[in-house]
Amino acid sequence: MLTSHNRFPYSAITERPQFNWPGEKRLAVHLCLNLEHFAYNEGLGLSYSPGIAHPNTYNWAWREYGNRVGVWRIIDLCNRLGLPLSVLLNSACYDHCPQVLEALRARGDEILGHGRTNSEHQNNFSEAEERVLIQEVTDAITQHEGRAPAGWLSPGVNPSNLTPDLLQEAGYSYILDWPLDDQPVWINTRNGRLLSVPYPHEVNDIPAIALHDTTAEGFANMIIDNFDEMLEQSADQPLVFGISIHAFLIGQPYRLRHFRRAMEHIAQHRDKIWFTTTGAIAQHFIDHDQPAGGQGR
Image 1 (tube, rainbow, N blue to C red):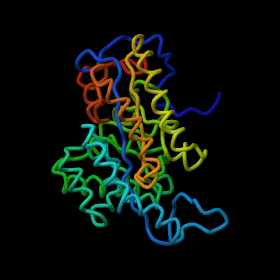
Image 2 (image 1 turned 90 degrees about the vertical axis):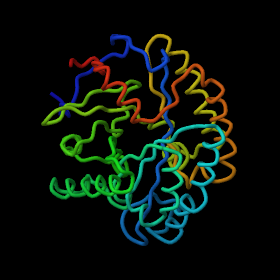
Image 3 (image 1 turned 90 degrees about the horizontal axis):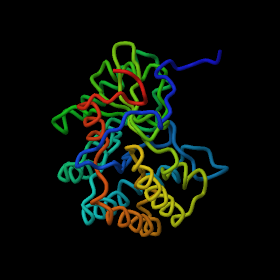
């Protein structure tokens, strides 16, 4: 027998119960903005300077462009199109760039936990250390936003084996670490269950652009093609389409121009879809007690 996570059983999407999203819509769309801050010259982080040890000034500054410039371009775009954001937040941003959080708060965007900083991954922590990390992030978001976060994406999308258990015990209702389905899936934990909301690995600018060298035009076309195909598929099964972006990548002017084209395409179909936040998707699913992924209640 192969080693298993023992979190959920296999389920074919063609064998699941039918349901609708609000307004009798069949396709839910959410846009995730990763808002991150990195330690200078230490810790983890994506390297974009081959041959130079990371971290370093070049890579730190590359990422910081998103907090200083790129995020403001993205906020302006979403304001113009009336699009909500699901903000995956490194809590270190509260001290580093509070103006960004003020702008997102004024828009009413959802704030999710995304660790303290992407310079560290919770998979490297002991259970006690990870519990402290989760609590520190939860407390910071609760203090600044007036409500506790309901969702979590692990830094580097690198959870530990205990992350679902610790999140459920800390009061979280959903997680984004498992890109395995186009519908939410219940994950068993040692003291209950946690909902996995679809988070994109493919339609995500980090793997697409930074790792696989997809062009700005190619990434925009990827978003459009994925949307058009899922809109057709949703006639048979209700689906979730997630888009993940980072301000230091999509906020670059030449990428933003193509990204705007993709978002305008989706916005033109607003009457056919539910464009919402990850938290709203999770809450609708939970409220209707759907047996996600074929798993029983």
